[in-house]
Amino acid sequence: MTTTADIADFALGLDFSDLSDDTVDELKKRVLDSIGIAVSAMDEEPVGVVGDTVAEFGGEGCTLWGGAGGAETASPPDATMYNTALVRYLDYMDSFLAPGETPHPSDNIAGIVACGEYAEASGKDLLTAVGVAYEVQAALAWNAPVRERGWDHVTHTVISSATGAGAILGLDREQLRSAIGIAGTAHNALRVTRTEAISEWKGIASANAGRNAVYSAFLAKHGMDGPKNLFEGQKGWKQTVSGEFEAEFTPAERVHDVMTKKYVAETYAQSAVEGIIELAEREDIDPEAVAEIRLDTFAGAKLIIGGGEGSRYEVETKAQADHSLPYMLAVSLIDREMGNDQYDPERIRGDDVQGLLRKVAVAENPDLTERFEAGEMPAEIEVEMADGTVHRIEKNQFEGHPNGSMSWDEIERKFHETAGERYDETRRGQIIDTVLQLEEREVADLVELLD
Image 1 (cartoon, rainbow, N blue to C red):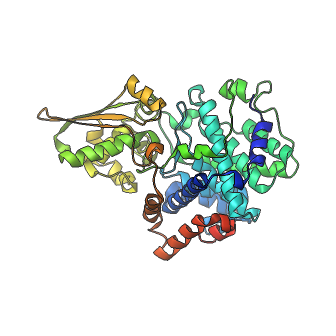
Image 2: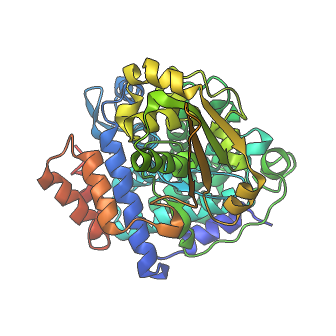
């Protein structure tokens, strides 16, 4: 039986020395990737809404990365809200690939950094707490998926974030159990966030979960007793949210099963986007001569971004576009790239992409579902031309999938691309060096570079 005591014992029992060198390396990659994505999102309007809201109330204790609404600092919960929105909004963050759930463990990072800054923690403390959160979130996603029961995956995030935040804040065992209990009892999120007519809340929901998690940790820190029987109690999490499950925890080794996104697109679209770009370039496809695009994919992709949870052909906003396989395949074929520019409002409304996306057919293939559940991310694409010619490509995975994870050089290249519009080469180099040397540095050394 998995309990708040099991999670607290795992979190408080994990020491930096328990982490393998390879695991430390992967955790550093997660931190650097998340910071770069955050920098790239600093001028996005929905993130600005969060920033203005946070700034209206003021607060001290933690850095607002890049500043927000004229403010430079906020309380730990509010800083978590804003900084997590930066990491998450673009849909360029990492993902853990479980058969029944696809959470984004990088949703935990900004909150742990905020709490680490507040607690004057070391870089070792930061990496260990991030490892704790990644492990808890991945274990819950693998063993206790909640998507099919109508809950959003940030229902896991609030538990993993509370655990990581409580660990770096130095909560004792009973305080941490209370923090987990408060977070997991009070903050379960509905799946409607990602179904049918998708709103901008989709990109902000995990920031709200992170804020709630950090607030729960501070309540417990100051003596609030929480429901320590969160999971097993009558009408508790297992009865109401997840069903029965049992989870075990490793020394943060599940971070090795986390993917890095190559494209600014929903997780399950990565192989398909890579495939259609390769096909368009290989065959020099004329978009105006395309009669139909056919994608065979696995069940999760069909469900979430292929029309299983509402039409994905009515695309007017970024939030709708990055969860629409028809849109992403159409614009990727035309532009032969899938980055932030492909979500510009004028690009989304373009007649060429709006016309082509309606020629995209998405179907679930049970064989591909089996392959996905066995650790691949398969996609089979056919592009039929007006003259009857059919171009075809198959993908087993994409660059950044755990079976072919990005090297440090590739992570750094992505970081320079994402952070390059705001920070000069010197600043970017300082951030990279600080992350690489985190075990010898303090959390404050990192956040002072994120102004």
